[in-house]
Length: 254
Image 1 (tube, rainbow, N blue to C red):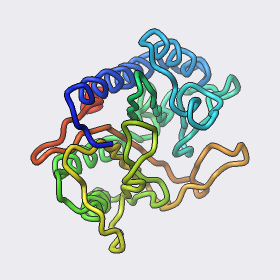
Image 2 (image 1 turned 90 degrees about the vertical axis):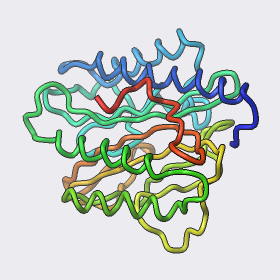
Image 3 (image 1 turned 180 degrees about the vertical axis):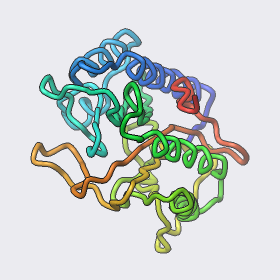
Image 4 (image 1 turned 90 degrees about the horizontal axis):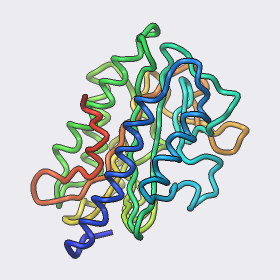
């Protein structure tokens, strides 16, 4: 969507604070020994208390309030009472929701407890690359150039990017135009970011794989070669200068 009024901005800020707060509190709540369903139910209770509705449930009938992906899972992980979290796991939580007709999306990967498997450098790279990409986004900039920047920064850090998962427009529904904001340079993508547009920008930074594959559950996307992927995502409003980071309540820079 494109913001046309203060009411639009206020509505987006409200739902963005809800998803950012939910993601932050879920991350702080998660502990080794918990199941991903326990963490998801906690997130669902926060969204409900804030008056927000789970976007993946609302849009796709997803079997969870949020998406929780662990280790070699990249995205869309189904919360399960059989999936137990362990010390040092690489965990990704993606929270998207609707409130008052406005939608926002926020995601972040983190290491659970002590970093015994040395995932933290990957997490830090994904987070920093998103920060760098956001600092370059403004009205008129080519989407392909931001994708190229993400890919270049990943390579500089010794990593690669997942090419079949992308950022997207958002605001009045979960997925809007532009439908694809890739993590790599696509010379055929001639679209440009537009001032006042609302988009969710994501970094999928990988230790080796460049594709995520759907598992038999019909939802979860994972690597099949043992690679690990860290994802970070913010919903923003594009301006002529630095974007407005709507989901900053998550404070993923910490």
